Amino acid sequence: MPAIKFYDHEPIPVEMHKVKIVQQLHLLPADQRLVKMKEAGFNTFQLHNGDIFMDMLTDSGVNAMSDHMLAGMMTPDDAYAGSESFFRMRDKLEEIFGMKYCLPAHQGRACENILATRFVKPGSCVIMNYHFTTAKAHITRLGGHVEELVKDEGLVSQSDLPFKGDIDLDKLEACIEKEGADNVAFMRLEAGTNLIGGQPVSVQSFKDACAIARKHGILSVLDASLLQDNLYFIKIRDEERKDMSVREITREIADQFDMIYFSARKFGFARGGAILVRDEDLFHSMEDLVPMFEGFLTYGGMSVREIEAMTVGFDESMDMDVISHGPQFIKYCVDKLADYGVPMITPAGGLGAHVDASTFVSHIPQQEYPAGALVCAFYLCGGIRGMERGTLSEERNADGSERFASMELVRLALPRRVFTLSQVEYVIDRVKWVYDHRDMIGGLRFVHEPATLRFFTGKLEATSDWPEKLVAAYKADFGEDQ
Image 1: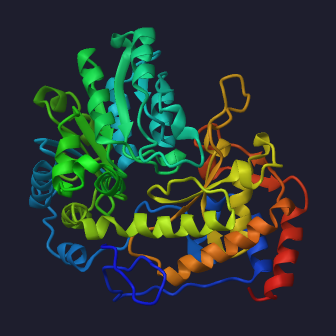
Image 2: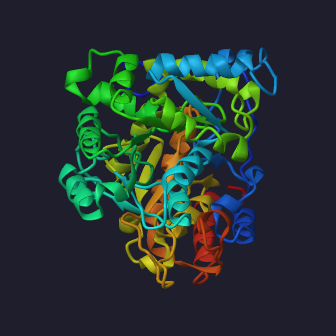
């Protein structure tokens, strides 16, 4: 997506694709949205998609496929074992990442399960720049613990730091000394950091961290689920690499790691996943876990149609015009809202526009889940479904006390090639309205709280009648049918 210049118009991102298939959307009146929100237990994951106007929950598995990806789905080899579709995917991944061995899995968290099952033991440590919910849950389920070592600047909401996902190298050395290298199951770096605003990691940070891990004999693992956004940011923010191709940058990063895994629901724009392994013995030490948990070694729980689409999608993820669409739309949204005064995570990262809920609704205490309340307000006042990324997404401490998140964010994801700029403008407008009425928003409390990954299936209720009052104010400004 090049920066197209305009003669008599403010700069805006221009889509480098055309729309040929559409899906109709529906905007329920605000009173109906209030009913649906209560039925969903004030949990946006529990809403029916048919009750949503702008679904910005995630980009996982909901990105639009290209014509070439859809065409690829017509030519699969559906053999149970030895599918040629798998070998085409494996060869494409080796071409891009330079790793010979591939373990297919049905999505990213399945890869995390295999890695945790193979390497995590009770009391062992996994080092990360920052955790992701399912990655951490698999580790703690097996008695391990996570050490998050992102630089302190990465947790500052508004800044101009280009790579806020970088790991702190001094903290890394200190952690290895404290834990003992033998007790570190592996080091997992996320490109970029999902839960703190989709912030990217620099190539130099990858290199330095992996060198430290290698020195201590610790395995290095890259979570490449959000890699395409990270590649875009490296290309535009790293002066040393602005003249390198996306493929060259990808290989430079990949060459640092022992293993790479990803969710193709994000990287590749389809639905699947895989673990790539450099060492043959390491590969063989995990291969029995694929047929045990996923399926045979040449389909890994995936449809071969998806495998063919993924293979095309991997190539498209090496195209700057393709991978720039999401970040440019996100930046447009973030900049417009920040100019209005809405507290946003800056600089704009990948995956989506991230609202700093701790500042937006600073009157709501963390134990009443401010990000969870704000994400409900966005649905009530516009039919917009975002995702809470704060304390609600954490798990309680062993003693039952609340583990407060480092940041309270609402993520408004922008699936690739899905929304138009006018729809983004609608979201900006409704977020502005909510910001001007933020004092009306109150907290939430659990009425059903699962022990693990509670943000997926938990049910909550409002701590007062604030949703009714907010909807009444919204209707006064926009009418009964909006």
